[in-house]
Length: 410
Image (cartoon, rainbow, N blue to C red; front, side, top):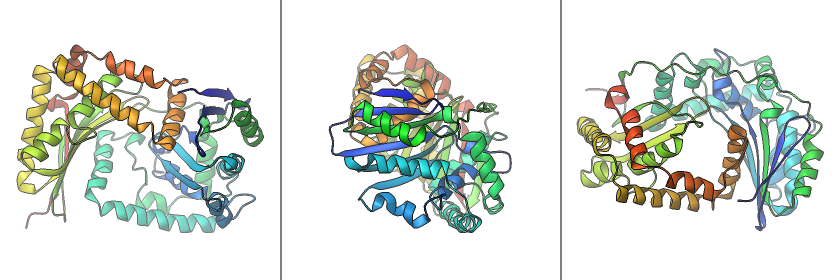
């Protein structure tokens, strides 16, 4: 896909992606997330993402929320371990309005104490909601164990204790230390020419003061694998198997993405779904995931099942892992896996807001964006030998952590 990048003097990059659609999409991505939080401040990045919608130097909360919704646009935001993202979808005439609002909430929020108190209450309710969903909570607890002693293990929402104790100084200091102008990308996908995007981007962001302290992230140690069971008042067992693995810069990333998709990724035809759900009817949900980060990655397998079927499910998963390790994929199986994965990627391009966010993140990570054909070519180049090597490195049972939420025994 065609794209253009323009860098402002303060380091902020403008990403322009032309589109003939009447609907436009824009985002502002900041290379900071929960892993950048100081010790004892888990949840601070996410807290700030909530607060930026509450009051700015020139707008009230209602004015912020209505600025785009009043013209039928959609505005939202989210926080991950490494990114903060604000995004919007809108009709083409409202690009100027959207970029103006992005500038206002990101760089001119005032973080009033009364709004902080209200938002703490909202987030504490959000934490309680997640704790009531074991299929969600188990991921946070698993990653806390996987990255023990490192900020990557922080729950993105934080904890009841940390959120309750945030101060306005915490918020201001975090934003100053982590909202680096050279680590910010403002991306626009729409029916505009490059000059228009650069002109409007310059208008709204050229005056932002340059802020480019170094990005200080500590790579997590790889800990000895453990088996952990936590008993909870729940009806089913929930289990995650996983390990640290390849980063976004690793040469094997494309191969593991392909292997993950084949083994337990999107679609009903994955190996795990066919074996665990369709053949034996043991679990409603069984899936694998690969999440590459800047200096490590997470590979995991999740399933939920009745307690008395848990060991059977584990045995079947280990059996399928052993098959892949011992026999790998033959050329026909690999080609089918590539066709499936390439088709899914192509279809995902139809999600325009997801596409522009993905492109902005890629620009931050790699300072370039591969075309769709370049992405496909990387997948096509994966060999059976590489798949065998990846399976041997990642799917070794002895290096997998096993983390379980189990029903309390009566």
